[in-house]
Amino acid sequence: MNIYRLILTLCMSSFASHAIAAADNCFPFEQQQGGISLPVSIAGTQTSTYLNTGTRTISLSTGLVEKLNLRIEQFTPRAPRRGLAPPTVELVKNVVVTVFDQDLEMEQVDVFDDALPSARMSLLMFSQALVQIDYPQSQICLLLRESMNLGAAENINMRRASDGAPAIEVTINGDKELWLRLQIGLQGALSVDHATAEDLGLIDAEIDAETPGSQPLEGVVESLQFGPYELGNLTATYPSRAGGNSQRTRRNTDMRAVGRRRPIVIRGELGHEVLRHFVITIDFEEENMHIFAP
Image: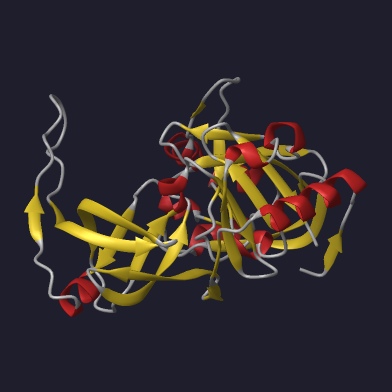
């Protein structure tokens, strides 16, 4: 990223300063591997977790489960009336997770296959509060809704997707308005579906045709309007045509958003390489969001 043009107003600056100053419930994190690593205690053992804004609450790797001497149980969800039977999932039960000075008694926690000890946690678990991610100071604050009028101060259009994850509206290359899932766990800047990559002119047809479906491709967008800020020369990843033709890719990645306002369609994700410059305040339940660049 070599363009970082900021459009600031006095009210935004005052709001951000008030929000940070009012926060007495803040917790440090580290920015590692293109994401946020937060110290936690799981089953009485100190470790760390990578944060995301996905819909799974907490999940542990098989390596961490083994390290913690927890017992994995098999669970098969009830099959729908039609279609294939769902795959068996692995989980551990009755785990105490201590995070943000809270002891969370988890009846069950998902397990993913990875020999390295690691954990993943969604910030949606704390949607009862205002969540403020201060990337420049590497801290997360949990604020009472009554502490500020975030609805009046919002400067990002935000919705909840049908799976509960947050989505925001951005403008790419000056005229392409898109809705992207807000994913703090995405290492890169942008990820879009194949059809959107075509619309944005990112695709080299020869490279696209020769690339295996499992290998993502990259292009560069000239500008990204993110609320009142504009950033430039960002890398955007997208799947190759071998991963599915553009029409099928478009259908598979459509995700309707729900809520109090008009429905929208999500075309990709916005990740860490964009977000790391900002202080972001989110009300997941009320669909309000404010960003500020200190």
